[in-house]
Amino acid sequence: MVAFTILAGGYDVFVATYLFDSASSSLSLLSKSPTGPSPSWLSLHPTNKSILYAVNEVTAGALQSFDIGPKGTLSNAVNTVSSGGDSPAFATALSTGEVAIFNYNSGNGRIVPTTSSPRTFDNSAPVITFPRPPAPGVSHPHQAVEVGNEVLIPDLGGDTIWRLGRTNIPGNYKIQGSIPQPKGSGPRHIAVGNDRIFTLHELTSTLTVQGIPNAPNGTCSIIASASTIPPNPPSGAVFAAAEILIPPPTAKFPKSYIYVSNRNTGVLDTRGDTIAIFEHVNVGTRSEGLKLVNQVYTEINQPRGMAFGPADGRGGEEFLVVAGVAGTAGTLVLKRTDGGRNLELVVKNLEVPTRTTFVWL
Ligand SMILES: *[C@@H]1O[C@H](CO)[C@@H](O)[C@H](O)[C@H]1NC(C)=O
Ligand SMILES: *[C@@H]1O[C@H](CO)[C@@H](O)[C@H](O)[C@H]1NC(C)=O
Image (tube, rainbow, N blue to C red; front, side):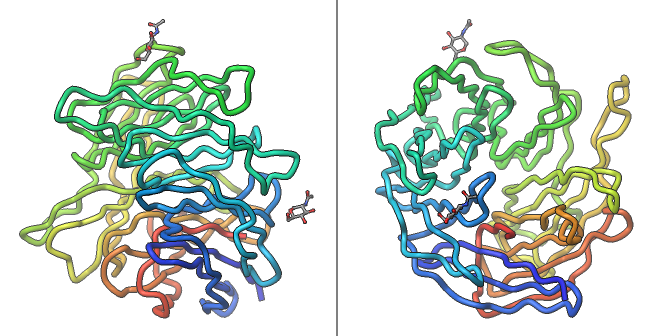
């Protein structure tokens, strides 16, 4: 038996703990640990897999820390601090020991240092507020990605990716530049690698690739743009692309593909929403581009987060866990087949109908 523990948050007041056994293809719900309201995004400490951070995606937004006990059960919240605004939809632990949390509704956030214990926050960090885009625009920071000495923040409302630079005081970052995105595109999540930024735009459901401009305000034009929307959607479908993952190459999957989830927030498709698989082709040549490899129907509706298993020698990287925000399709584990060009259902668990975020232990 090769058992993986998976933690799953959502719009409720608990984190669900699942056990996935890849040998017997079973997925069982082990426990539900109480949390603050709407732990819709989870992030593990970068080096200590016994410490979990969670957002409270509510009007008085907050960041919480937990100890992860035996069998993946969470302690009561060890520490809770304000996110400095309304509805944080994302948090991530940085290599510095700080935890970045950004508020979708209020266009601001904090990068909160931890103390001598990574479970206890230093609440002195200021609130970082992004410039308001021209009316009627509102800044909607949606993610935070550490790249070298910077933290990049895609702003869905501002059509840009903000570049935050460190100062010598923990938690104090300055908005030092930006990487503008096409007007009205709504950049939601990014993935960075191979000297490229891959941006998933929610409002136009497009995936783009561009170079990483020099800081602070260099520019790099978009090399290629592709639609993520599946063919022949039901009438009344409204697409809002959600997540992008580019798992690093491993011995079993030597080629990297780009996995993008399509959320249909309009008339639901009975086949569920798709995960689109792209290949980054002809890199560094004039014909560099993004080639659609597959659109995989998943049975779930409106996926938010999804996550590949860890590539730590146990074989977890073969598997992808995903769930929807709408419907009752539960949590699914899929596996990469055809070298990563396809995904097939392994098992599902319907005990919790919807989930929005996952971490593998
Ligand atoms: C990881 O965190 C747990 C929970 O706080 C703690 O007991 C443990 O000592 C930490 N491990 C390391 C290596 O720091
Ligand atoms: C770069 O952009 C930022 C944010 O828009 C701005 O505040 C800053 O003045 C710019 N810096 C330079 C050197 O142009």
